[in-house]
Amino acid sequence: MTAVDTNVLVRLLTGDEPKQAAAARSLFASGPVWIAKTVLLETSWVLRSLYGFEESAIRDAFVKLLGLKNVHAEDESSVAAALALTEHGMELAGAMHLSSRPPGAAFVSFDKSFVQRARRVGVSDVSSVSVKD
Image (cartoon, rainbow, N blue to C red; front, side):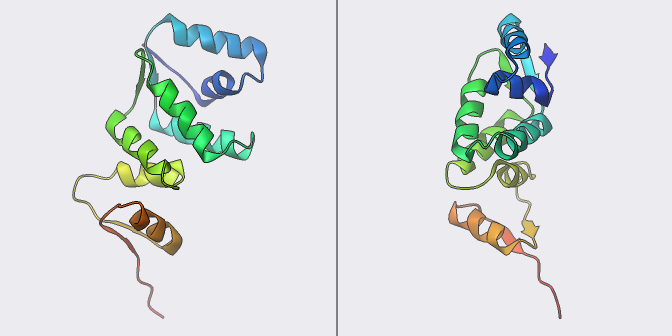
């Protein structure tokens, strides 16, 4: 099994450096590939921030990539849950934070709009941290 870095995923998904993209395709065709959650998060950030990808395009690319039989992600069930949340308007990083928490753990944030988005998509046990004046 080979674990890949963010730059390998970026080359694979953008094809912007033809020789590196070809090497990435070859790597993914040669055997089992493992992707860390941190690599997925960083790849998402790079694709959105530097390449202008929409969240839906990133989700679609990740779903297709992780659907390959030889590709495995760290904590696959939480990654799948996070990708499902992005279908309803959450960014991958926030969705990954929510889906990676232990069962039964409440999630708190100072970001009230994040809490509202999470509740809108059906995530329970999410609340804002109270700040006293």
